[in-house]
Amino acid sequence: DTAVSQTPKYLVTQMGNDKSIKCEQNLGHDTMYWYKQDSKKFLKIMFSYNNKELIINETVPNRFSPKSPDKAHLNLHINSLELGDSAVYFCASSAVVNSNQPQHFGDGTRLSIL
Amino acid sequence: ELKVEQNPLFLSMQEGKNYTIYCNYSTTSDRLYWYRQDPGKSLESLFVLLSNGAVKQEGRLMASLDTKARLSTLHITAAVHDLSATYFCAVMLRGGSQGNLIFGKGTKLSVKP
Image (tube, rainbow over all chains, first blue to last red):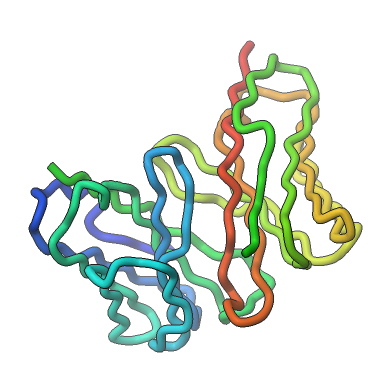
């Protein structure tokens, strides 16, 4: 059974469009995250949610809006997509916000902007 | 601002050889994580190091943490091709951004026969 699942796995779209990526975890964790991995493989945290509430919002354009309908889901909506948004977006979860245990990552969503 | 630096960023080694990847970080933290990423895949947790002097081993990989030196090492013993991957260290921030993992740039390891 997949622990952290993201959909879609691949997303190819044009500049200016709006798109969403969905993430679900079945681990019973309270905290979920979105990371961006750029073309040089550098990973950077974007958002962190604890029990449906935003706790970390790094310097991310406000075109990116996370939404957590419940603690098992954290979706990422992106408005007015730009070329620089092309990257792999990873969702992750951990038991609690300050857990000693590692964060569990999804398989990533490869976003390509044409 | 916490910075995490890994070196080397690229490592090409022959099977059977030993090598060490280094991870330095700039501010106090007592939680360090090592992850492995295969091309096009997710991140897999390898080690969690939670205290000064912590040492963990799994197969041919051994990780250690020196919080005073702000240094973690990932030692590879008698490398095999299956270890080819990118290895990331990540440090957890204390304080206001608790839970925020800061990643190093990764070390791309290529093990050749």
